[in-house]
Image 1 (cartoon, rainbow, N blue to C red):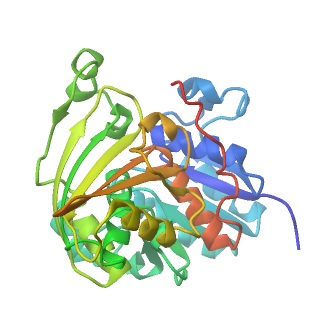
Image 2: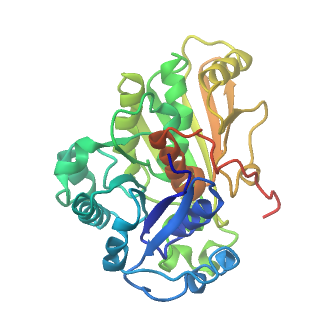
Image 3: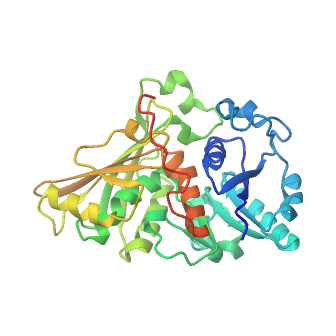
Length: 354
């Protein structure tokens, strides 16, 4: 069996999540960059969009879709990591899957967009307001936070959204362990990279710097996604009341989840239950004190803390929105789908002072 790295096609190549995918692929011993597809900057150096990746990808350029497809016959197996926009990703994935069939190679797809986060086209259309671009592919994808996926039973995967990942890491063990009533209130704050690379008023530095503000209160598009994925992971329907906030930092998410407590009477007991739930999860740490965003920035790690009083239970969760909430979770899925150690290529720690 060949020990050669598996080549990777990254879609949506010039966005923030794609930049993180390129960085993580470069650090992964079992993966190599085959093509970074970007329709807007095809032919230009990758370092022109991601200067920090220059030492790693000094001579590499962005590719057109046609160029990437033309390389499929060069290897028997490929991985596709999609950071293309919602609605645009599924058609690109369809094109590549068809091309791989024609080329006689195997393709493993992990999609970080929203296109494969719902099990039905109706559920997708209800949230995004347009028909699903490739409903025939939905059954071939499994969407879950990797820690909640159990046995992998599909060839491809969808990575939940960044806010959804933070909420699910907190909510799912509370439901699975019977520690909370299944009615959750969440306040979460995200860094400006969560809004993507296209400048807009809410990411403009004078507006964002030294500022915090809520948006889409109680009507965010991640609400139905979290409810569906929590029920899929636990078998129990939940209710969710979510207020997202924009924060004055570039990356990271801090989420605080509240619910009525059930079957637990102390913070120590709750912490022991969450620790047991995540005992085999290399990227989730349950800590005694409330975690800080800087503890996890730039990494695939999540940190949770839990507190209980006479009536309520709360969990604080911090993740990096671009890594654990997107690119790192996607690489974690690649590891699972490939039968590799789940931590492969993802064990770097935070620089801390960012």
